[in-house]
Image (tube, rainbow, N blue to C red; front, top):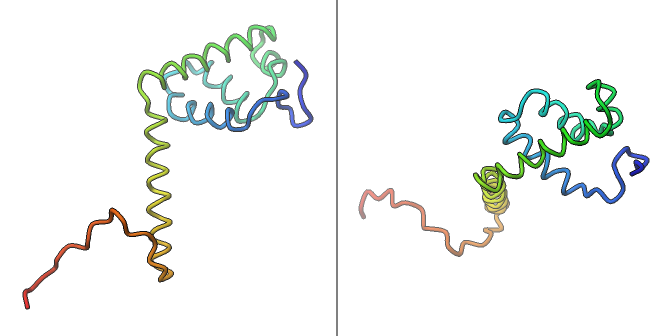
Length: 125
């Protein structure tokens, strides 16, 4: 496999890379230091397997296997626990709430369907 000018393998989706980086952020502490560092260099710093192999003092296939196993472990943890998906869901809810708040501040009002009325601070009339 040859690298593209940006150092990324051809056809490697930026979305896929972002998903893997998120999994590394969430579950990275559960990997060994060796696995975490190899994944960080490969995903965050865009190091090739050849560069990793030189850095780690192993073969290119050894570096590839290390990263592949670590990423498989991250994906297994996500499939089992679902923490990254839950964080993404919460991020989406937060973004929606921030957008609604911005709309309210701009006086547009936004979409109020499903929004409970403000609490009654009543002092009676």
